[in-house]
Each structure stands twice: as structure tokens, then as C-alpha cells.
Image 1 (tube, rainbow, N blue to C red):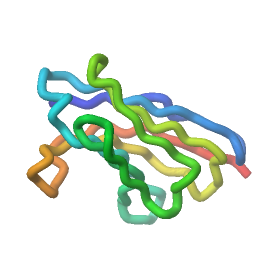
Image 2: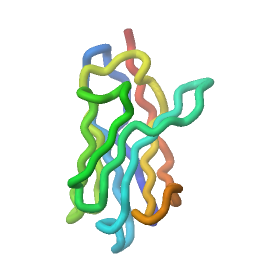
Image 3: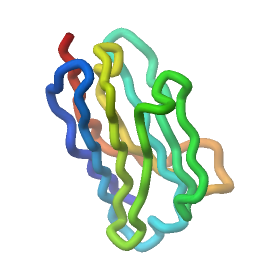
Length: 118
């Protein structure tokens, strides 16, 4: 599985961005997809995840109510809609995938930079 993240950029505090992650391969619809982020000098953290059918989603407490993860299995794409952005959301955002029976994410995209200016 190859993952290609896009949609990052520079946005002001309170603004919105939508990240996309396009996946190759025919098994996308069977994969759990996640978004992670890593800010300068900090460890990578999970932001959100979505089950293979899209019916189950989880979020980090820091983004609940502001970010929404979704997927379109027909387009092999997962999205992260980010609203009410804060400077502390500044990070490189990565998408990743794993099989539902595994805990570790196996495949990672290249990352897309989100910068929120104050």
C-alpha cells in the first residue's frame, strides 16, 4: 500500500484545512486509516483514526470537536477536515494504514506540513 498525503499549508488561527490521503492498491477498504502528526521537538502522536467501513472513528482529546476524519472507499482516500485551527496544531501530518487485526500501522505516507500562524 502506498499512501500520498496532501492538503497542508499555511493558515491563520481559527482557519480550516482539509488533508487528503490517497492510497494505492485494492485492499484500501479493508484497512484502518489513521492521521498522525509530529511537531518540531515533539514525539509523533495519533490525531484520528477511522475503521474500514467508516463507521467507527476515534480522536485525540486535543482535536475533538475541531477535526473530522472520513473516508471514501470508492476513491481510496481518507480525509482530515481541520477547523478552528490553533498554533499548537502546527506539525507535519502523516497518514498511515493498518489491518484491523493489528495494532501497529504498517504503511505511512510522506507527510504534509500544516502551519498555523497566530
